[in-house]
Figure 1 (tube, rainbow, N blue to C red):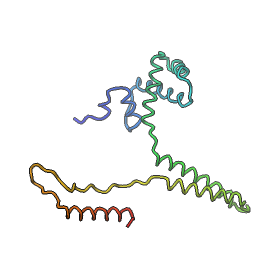
Figure 2 (cartoon, helix red, strand yellow):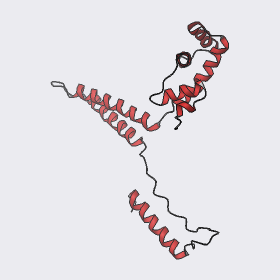
Figure 3 (cartoon, rainbow, N blue to C red):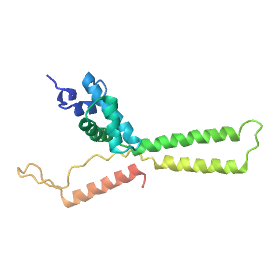
Figure 4 (cartoon, rainbow, N blue to C red):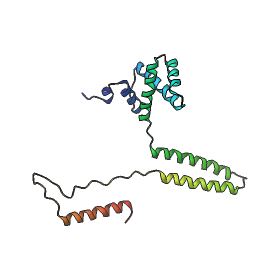
Length: 187
């Protein structure tokens, strides 16, 4: 019988993390109440309230003890911090999208029928285009690593494979360098 990750989750925290990160995970009513408290704590933390004020609001809203509310704040920081990792490519992509929307708005304004383009707005458009190009070029490209070649020398105690000769290793190294340079376009 195959055991799923959901079955392996031994704590409420582990199960809620699975619920937040994977599809088809269902929570019990008690787990949903716990998640609601943690979401409240997270929302209040984002409002930059002081810890005592956050604890007090959780106690009032969810009818739990101060101790439970305080633990909920600390667990919420851990849970939502681990789920909300920033992805640089994604953040830059969102920024690029916003820039493109702003450029399109300005273009519509500048080049609307019957509107004489303003030199100041044309300069602003050029600057926005330059910034959007910079953002687009800042988005990291995914580089696929070349396949790993076998080591030049293999130390084998059973003596089944002889090591490469120095001349063969130099030839193979030259071929690897040529392949990497041709893939990278630096030939």
